[in-house]
Amino acid sequence: MTYRVYDYGRVGKDGKKRDLHIEKALAVTNRVPIIRDKSSYPHVADCDYFTVDKLNLDGKVMKRMEGSVSEESFASILILEGKGEIICGEETLSFQKGDSFFISAGSGSYQIEGVCDALVTTIREKAAPVRIGIDIGSRETGIGLVDIHDKLLASRVLPVDVSHSPEKMIEEIAKAALLLLERQGIAIDQCVGAGIGVPGTIDRKAGGVRYSNNIRWEQVRLKEEFGKYLPVPINIANNADCAALGEAAAGAGKECQDIVMLTIGAGVGGGVILDGEIYQGKGVGGSELGHMVIVEDGKECTCGRKGCLEAYVSVNALAKEAEAVSGKMLSPEEIFCRASEGDMALKEVAEDYVRKLGTGMVNIVNIFRPQIVIIGGSMAGQGERLLSPLRERVLKDCFGGSNAELPEIQMAALGKEAGIIGAASLM
Image 1 (cartoon, one colour):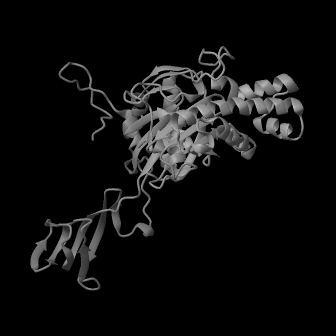
Image 2 (cartoon, one colour):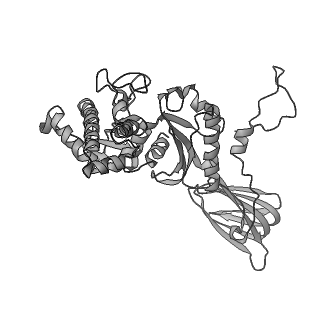
Image 3 (cartoon, rainbow, N blue to C red):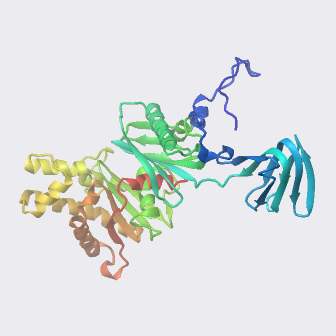
């Protein structure tokens, strides 16, 4: 692939100057000068694609060199100075300055004898591939590098400023991802792709965000915009789907094929994994589990409807209920802690919260019958204080009760890493 960085003012057949590719060229260029040291000897060049070694036979101390050509690589030999013989198998050929030899992969052992300087080029064993995972949230964006074993190698977090245009936000995120690769010493060629999770209604086929009230985006060509800076394949999905995929790949749902995950934070997201794949239906905008109605004509939700699960069980909704009875803004940890210590007003708030969340969970189980339901986001830290009453509610109210096959109900295992690993797993 060629990236045009300067074109001498030339024009195409249409009379217009041809497009330049400055950003893409910079993204794949190592702009750090090469520093030679003894540890690199005798390599003349070494990259992800090939290694070039310098061979010197002086006819005195070094008169002969033996090598072997495996099935993994050929050997290309260019004679710079001198003369001698090259032997491979039953074939012996003389050489002199300017000759070039190609020994095909799998040829086995060979020898070079004489007095010469030569360059020997072979295919380098490639470093293990990595994937970029990007988890865009309403408050912060997580960026990580994930290996083939779904292990997070390195990550960084950027604050989200919704006052910035989508294009500006995307540029900042993409450049941060490239900087993370550079700081880890990972060439762009080693990166097999980037997966991006975004809140809202996502058109995965078209690669765009149709609507996201969390970050105030509408009709954003996400894949196209990221492609201006990241010269790798790109896939996108809803960030709750990515979190579920992450837990399926490396977390609480690792042994399961059918998973439903609720991510509870400023809003309530839902991710559904069926047969190991993200379920999204035939249209756009599926699996919005936070916007199922659990109270007819109930509280107004951020989506504009009334009575949605999100309007009752998001962290913001819980904090408002607690503030109404305590006069203070409290974290989920503080609310559940004080409730367990005997604060009757907060105990009532906590119990109502569990009832509402339980209603949503029973609906989910009745519809999908997954192997496991995972709770992630800010509520994951509540552990058994939340899980125990939810399990009781599911057992009591799910169709079939104890006669049915009920799922496990667990907290997420990966925390904020789930969205990054899941996004990377889109590749």
